[in-house]
Image (cartoon, rainbow, N blue to C red; front, side):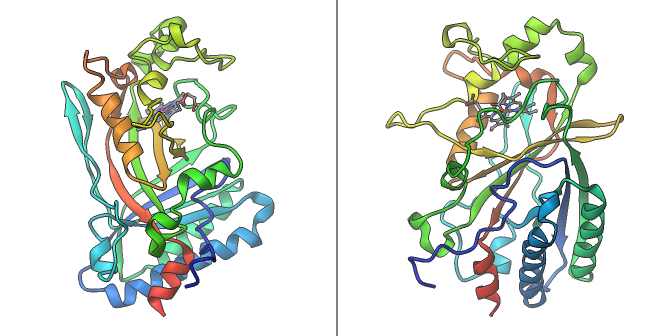
Amino acid sequence: MDSQVMPREQLGVCAEGNLHSVYLMFNANESVESDMRPCVANVAQYIFELADQYSDSAFNGFVAIGANYWDTLYPDARPSQLKPFPAMNRDNRDAPAIEYDLFVQVRCDRFDILHLVANEVCQMFEGLVELVDEERGFRFLDSRDLTGFVDGTENPKGRSRQEVALIGDEDSPFKGGSYIHVQKFAHNLSKWNRLPVKKQEDIVGRTKSDNIEYASADKPLTSHIKRVNLKDSEGKSMEILRQSMPYGSVKEQGLMFISTCRNSVHFEKMLESMVHGDNEGNHDHLLHFTQALTGSSFFAPSLDFMISVNG
Ligand code: HEM
């Protein structure tokens, strides 16, 4: 491929927020790779084309390949930073790894379309995979997490979404691809809702109803935004693009946390800072109110990568 041409990215990686989402986690059957490669490319192409067909409902999505399945599916080349989910644990703060072979995310402002597409995708994969987990996400109020705090405010905006989330020339065979980390968090909302609002705000580092960031000096070292606002050795902000949405039902609900990034380091450093904290042990107190049930690492290649490897 001409290195000057940007391969077509999968449109869900950098998409703006939607009203609804469906998350499908699959494991692959044994020894189906030669059928799986064209099937993965077809599913990705199908999702890509639906974005045009349903552009008035902002349809988008992507297919991502699990870190532990990549070499089986594409043995010839591996994205340079693709590795299993960085599981970690400290006291009762747990970030476990639960890996899957394939992850399909589809999002849209019409839920009926998502339902149709999710069924169609499963049919396309029939005989090749087992559907291991499925969740449906939704916009809650004015883009709030179920804790009641607006989520996504400090996400990269406009073209810097691509800049943050998509690989460029640093790993040219994988240009236009993205490292994806997913954690399904189940919230303990009855515990959270017993906290006075000021205590909740101290834990997030922003005000609740009007979503104003605390002044730097007022941000507790244990607040979420203090813990995840990190700089690299050159003083540059470490950024990720968050595509998280609330999910669940009355029985179990929380946040499908989804990070897309052109490297796998930023997410890992943030998670370390939340779970292990700084040298004084200041960890993220949000973790007292939510529990990560899963942790999975994927790579979403460009659409052109999947088509060309298949061809
Ligand atoms: C910011 C919620 C997990 C990274 C925020 C904000 C909220 C929030 C309410 C402030 C508004 C905003 O800028 O979006 C949550 C909840 C989580 C969770 C409820 C889990 C239950 C994580 C994880 C990471 C992360 C696992 C990364 C490992 C970030 C980043 C910001 C942020 C980078 C922006 C910080 C800034 O620049 O101000 N999150 N988050 N979050 N979160 Fe989370």
